[in-house]
Every structure is written in structure tokens, then in C-alpha cells.
Length: 377
Image 1: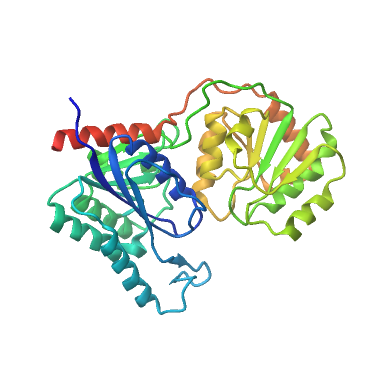
Image 2: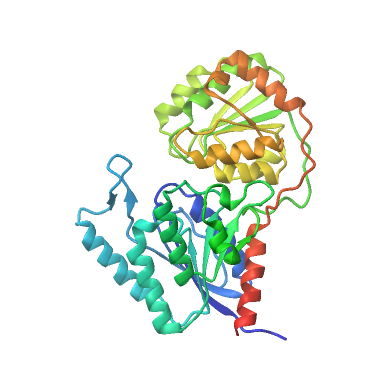
């Protein structure tokens, strides 16, 4: 039986970085096989959004969090924040194309609570225009721990609004309750779909003596890149490919290039085929950010990770993956060239774990949504 195409409204607002949008787009790619998806997104934008059947998107006027004051502000506007909120509401009002079969909201109510009025406003419009349709939440497996009162409030919001919570993660690696103590109260709505990563390659190329050193999309990580460049002369048989952030300035790149003392180091500012590059590498050295770790795991590349101190979530994920042998963590002390070359040899000599990690999260989530919509039709 040929079922009609569905319509799904998807809301994703990143307040820092691009990881959330990247994961959301991998999910939308899967959903678009049977549904027209309207995406409302804010925060940092991508240079180019994917071309998919029935896919429309609205980029809202940007609102970000000021790390110094913890206040919301609009970086592209000199208008008061209240005016920016009103502009966003008007843009949403114009963009939505009622009715929808379902709504997917990224992270809320476990995060993005600063945007609560906008999101709950959207939920109210949905109820008014579409009646009772499922509202899904799509959230990573590790949360920044919150006080009990805040957790209770999140549980209440889930019970009032959310049909299913899709967790992007593998419960054999990390369980949701490790960072959310009231998980038992919403366990009936929780579904682990696996990590969301690009699909693994159809055929595997041969590995070369290449070590990929990367800092992800952020500003942090220069110490790691410097350490790797200074270690390279001790490992002359390996080619070090050092990837700076795409936002690195010419002077920052020149500063790294000035540290290069031999022919086995190449500094590049961006790789748009990061995953393919990892497939031919013997080792990845990175800050262990979400998307990098997923690329590393889906390509089964041995890895060293230097967790960014400002983010407990990444530290915990690295610790869990390290306990299963997927990654070796680095500390500040390991960045001295002698120590780092030792760590690199150690990682290269380890046997890669046999255990498979669930990384098919986008396709699994899409299948589950399709089933739920078929049942509620």
C-alpha cells in the first residue's frame, strides 16, 4: 500500500557550535524519504543547507548565550532582545504551513529552556491548529547535570507535551540516568536510537601511515595541535595531517606552520571530507567532540582524545568510550612531546575492540517515527 507523504515540523536552536544542527540534518535526511520536513533553526548557520525532497527551512534571527554574563543576546542586531523575540515569532508565523502530522524538537525540555516561551508558544499553536499530534524530543545521551528542582520541571514538561524522547546514544555505553536522576519517571517515553553518525563506507580503503590531528569547529584546541606538531619529528615514519578550525585566522595558521620542523607535517585549515580522510588514517588525535567521535567510531579509527575542560559531557563520553577501548584519553601532562609520542605508540599497538556501537541513530529514529505515525493515523 502506498502511504501518503507526511508533514513534520522540526525545531532546532543551537546556542553554541554546530553539532546539534549537523545531527538534526542527518535525521531530516532520513525523514525526508517519507515526509516533507519544515525546519526552524537558529544559532550558527551552515554555509549550505542540503537539497532534499520536500525540505524547507527558516533561519531565525540569531540569539546566542553570552558566556561572560550568561544572558541571551542577538549578535547580528542592535535592537533590544524583546524586539528580536517578536521578529522571530513573526518569522515563524509566516513560515509554518499547517497542518502537520508531528513535531520534532531538538533538546528541549532537557536544554534550551531559555527559549521556553518560543517553544511552548509553538506547541500551543500546534495544539490549536493540528489537535493532538505527537511531539517528539531528540536529545543526546549525556546532559549537563542540573539541580533536582530543574529536573522535576523537565519531567513535568515531558509529561505535559512529549510523546517520545529519542536519545541519540547506545545504552551499553552510557545510560540516560547517569546524568539525569529522574529518568525512571519518564522511562516509558524513552527510546535509545543509537548515535547519529554519517553512514559507514560501502568499501574500506587501505590505511596509510597517516595521523589526523583536529580541533573540531571550535576556538579551543590549539595546544593540542601545537603538541602534535612538536611530537612529529620523533615519529618520522608517520605523516601528521593537522586540521585547524575553519575559523582559524591566517596568523594562527602561520604560527602553527612556524612550528613545523620536518617534512612529515602538513597544516590545513579545513577538510570537507573528514570522514573519508579518517578511513585511510591509522590514528585520530582530537578534542573528542561529539561529531568527531562519531566519525572516529563509524570509521573504526584508533583514537586519542584530549577532553575540553569546560565541558563535563564530553569528558564523560570519552571516559565511557575509553573503558571499552575505543579511545585513549589524554591529560595536560600527556602533551609534552616525549609523553605524546609514547601515547601515540600505545594507541597504535592496541587491538581495536570487537564490540559494535549503535551508530545508526538517524535511520532508527526515522523508522520509529514512521511506525508511530502509521499507528496514530
